[in-house]
Image (cartoon, rainbow, N blue to C red; front, side, top):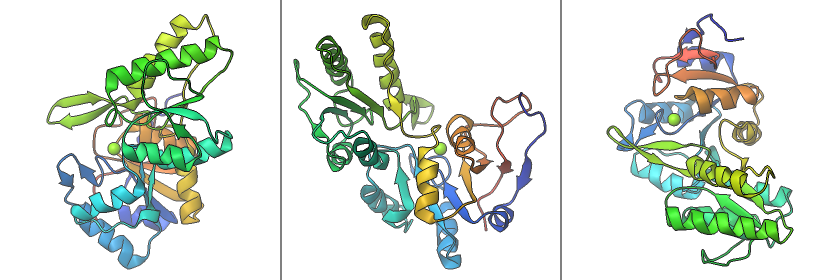
Length: 281
Ligand SMILES: [Mg+2]
């Protein structure tokens, strides 16, 4: 039943007094397409000064944590690698847990996405017609050719099924679209997976084949963040109800909706624990 009581508006200071760690979304909270948002630099500086346990929790699977360190540094944000948890960084654990060592894998994504698969023991294959596979990992719209990459993946999955093998299908970043620029949207990994899933539903004679999802709104990133920070009761700050808020709640983590893409209203299907207007400390 939807909650009709408005969540309490809290300051960041109040949230930190009530929780033992802080999880931060990247896009829409710390950065946007043009760089660091105004509150980001003073916030990161203050979190380090206070030695507050914090981590960045992002669905991006196109950049590794190491690449993010450099990118954040260029924006004046000194954030150590251990504090950056991307959906792509869950791929090695996924491959290991599924015992996919040696799995011939179609990777749709960037060079960093390929590295995550290799780290898990997967063996990326060349995107070529007729390729034989054991797994498909969809990470990002960038890096590989969007349409031909998906056509090769769809065809390879169907060939594997016809040969009696069921390939592992994993989607690191479930986001459907991303802000490309002012008023412009681009399709990304989640939309690619949906397209393949719909085609498979039509073509695989009723066999239900869907991608295992790693990023928000799944709970995995939050579970990892709690482990990394060794905290039990952190608070997440994010700007989207469907990913940040739903994912945190699924993981049993309190979450503040920061003014951004989503606005909570009475009757919203997803209700955050708190509302947050400013990131200032
Ligand atoms: Mg965001």
